[in-house]
Image (cartoon, rainbow, N blue to C red; front, top):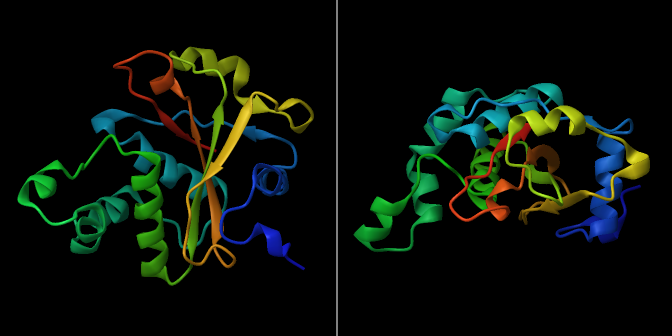
Length: 179
């Protein structure tokens, strides 16, 4: 039976338990292509494959959502300036969560983005070599976050990884990877 306290916005402990259930032996960070500043979309595609989401999205599916009216309506208030500012790359966690939610709506399966990131930012992908598997016994350096979803109690979590680099130095872009 599902824990009723895990509905909507689970606290850190309940989200951590959901992580441990999804990755009982720790996870592996799958280095993800950042070309075109689309690492967030690529992370969703890779994570969907690795976490056995069916039907899984392909990059073209997610880009079609980004180009669609519904994404635009959800990300823009009303002014023409805001329409011009809607990003088509270098997505935030909230934007990726919206894209995943809209994909879930399309396949009639509620999907919710979950993010795992290292507490200490990492600026170089080569640093991930030593950190590519996070074991459950010692994941104190690993933080979990989740983006709200209107059907959170029914939604399947899809986990992606952030290197947290945007918090290391001003002007540095963070990078999302698959899990």
